[in-house]
Image (cartoon, rainbow, N blue to C red; front, top):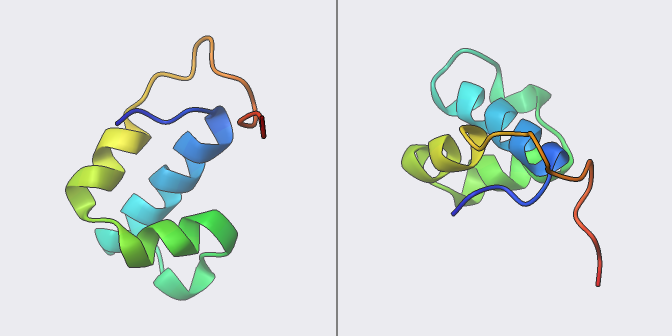
Length: 62
């Protein structure tokens, strides 16, 4: 499942870095912390690898 926005893609990247031990999990906040706790490394990799071109900065709430 690809990320729907640039913000979602970046949050997934931060969570993925924490899963891999490249970043401290305690430094995560908000969406990236939630993603870290609830998603597998494979799911995070899928979200984080989404191309940003053509994506909105934030997902529409509609």
